[in-house]
Length: 403
Image (cartoon, rainbow, N blue to C red):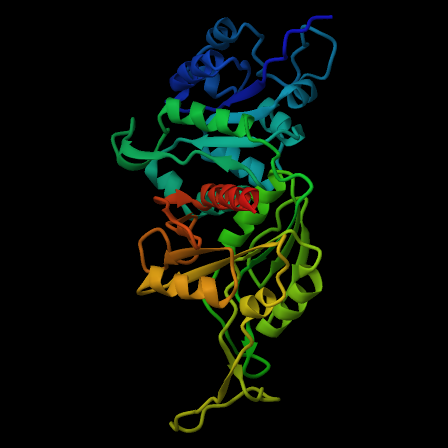
């Protein structure tokens, strides 16, 4: 038996588009990192680059047709799905993303990626109009919610003559991200993590409520990242239009009082508590039993009372071995407000962001944050929320190592 360490394996899916030729360079870059690469092509991709090119570069047969007789007696798409340590599709067309989002498996690539249990990464490339189409963006969000990694397309001059978003990201960047996923350590195994996410809804009557613009995307990204790193994750979620990450325990809440009760039930058993939810500061003093009607032009006064401060209430009972993290979504004096909350709520770290900044507001896939502890601040640039989540978790582990 050989003592040689098994190379990590990337199954590279190649779909039809002018950027197909760049997948050849991507394959070589992955090989230079000591990665074994197997290629699956769609029939449309074969119109741009012949399978023989990828076979020569990879040293392996290229899978194209689901009904081809394989060189060895095995169900080929299942064998490839099991072989993958990472399933990377580059370029990824709108078509393959739509199939994946809807669970359609009608060719070798879509069938194989559906069968894999390995992490999946997509590097989209298409015309700007196709990329910005609401259907494409909804499919991207659906796949993100399921834990699919993305290397978002760059902005530039496209082969069709247009300029805008949709250009395949530089293959060196894609290769770097692929290596990051392959080398990701399960450094949170054995840790129990509670994440809160989304808004609350405070009823005014049976129809109306007070809420806020929180989408839950940041909290869901943190829950997903913690689960991928091996943690046992409990996700307390307000009313959002997101799919819970696979492998987490989902606990719904509606009001701020609900959130406090659910969090209190689960907090004692947790090692790490990350409070990314946006609970309402106020609720109606009285909830009308029937729908409130217009008053013939007269104004209406709603009496509000202050809700409990969930983070502060939990922080009062924090044990020394626990790590508490909060969020400060602010519109002015961001760092100053965040530092006050850090102390007031007995937090170990607070994540501050200016929700008025482009790319850092509500219901977007990116964020710009500053991680603040008693000892230091670390500002992050504009990143995908999945990337921000990993930075937050790494900072938490660093904090815990210092205890």
